[in-house]
Amino acid sequence: MGTTLLPDGAGKYVLGVDLACPRCQEPLAAPHMLLRCQYHKAQRDQLEAALHSHGLVLNLSNVLDPKGAARGSVFSALAKYLPDCQITEKI
Ligand SMILES: [Zn+2]
Image (cartoon, rainbow, N blue to C red; front, side, top):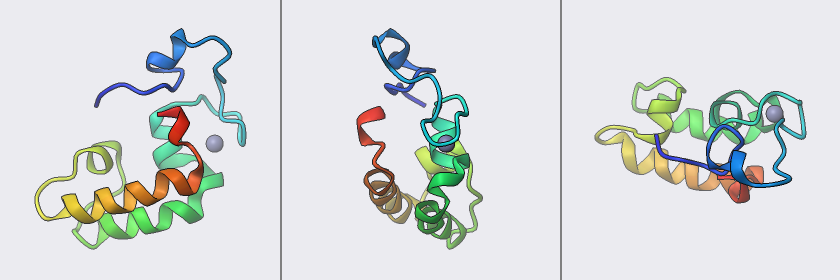
């Protein structure tokens, strides 16, 4: 799915990078930040709604590589989700 600056990606080479989510102490990885972090649940609702409107479930594949007609609205929702969660510097 590409690389990120999260500790499970290229971030492991960055000194001083947090290994855990600063909010809930779960391992700081893309699935946590995009799908499971309860701290970002409210912001994720719009992303999930965009997926559901195209009959898709919230999973990493559908968020990062939505197919067909879902692509535009899911990427728009993702483009809003990331800055709303203030995690753009981590990816
Ligand atoms: Zn978290």
